[in-house]
Length: 143
Image: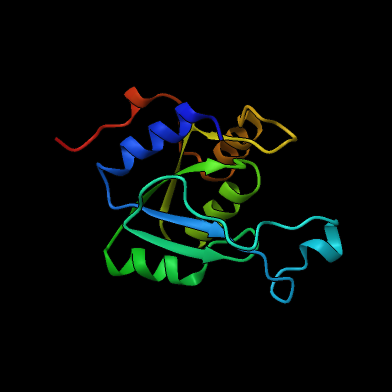
């Protein structure tokens, strides 16, 4: 993850209630190695500070993350991070299906090896959810 993106996410995390997901490999839960020939790390850690950290096995965030956001009466969820066209998009689908309003922060997201720019993910996000912010000026921070 590029350092300016990590620094930008860390700065933003101080302004909002923040959750992070970390992917941990468990072949019995998600068969990455068997089906794709690779596997995520066994003990990934978040790169930025977060109020809550949720472990996920695979592309989707855990249901406990949705429960946490609902318990806080969150409506709009700002999403950013690694693999805009896979993991971030999967989170968007889960948030959308839960009745929340996912918004991708494109300048704080990067793509996979398929598209490091994150542009593909942003276009898919816009197509499916409509809400993509491309620049920090579009984000109105609480005063």
